[in-house]
Amino acid sequence: MQNTGGTIQFLVYTKNPYRPIPADSAKVSINFAQLGLSGPCTVRDLWTGKELGQVAGEFAPYVRRHGAKLYRISKVKK
View (cartoon, rainbow, N blue to C red):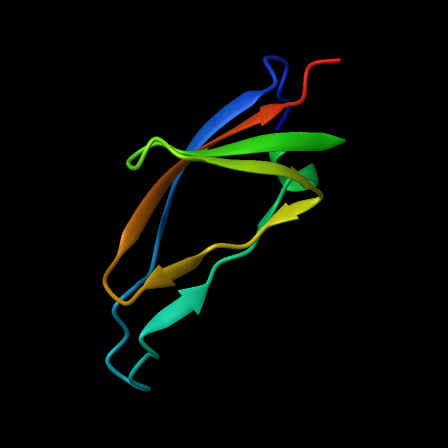
């Protein structure tokens, strides 16, 4: 995958396995290199509208059981 635009929007969610019963929330790691992004990026929660700041390499939000979150990751413009 090659990311030429520098911005990716993605949905993070947890699955509903029957066994074992999941914890109240799960840490979901997103590796920027696997998305074609390098260097520092800004992360925005698209449902709350909050800027979550600059992150480098990986973003790992906690998502509640049966939950979902929607984020935008953009390369920092120099």
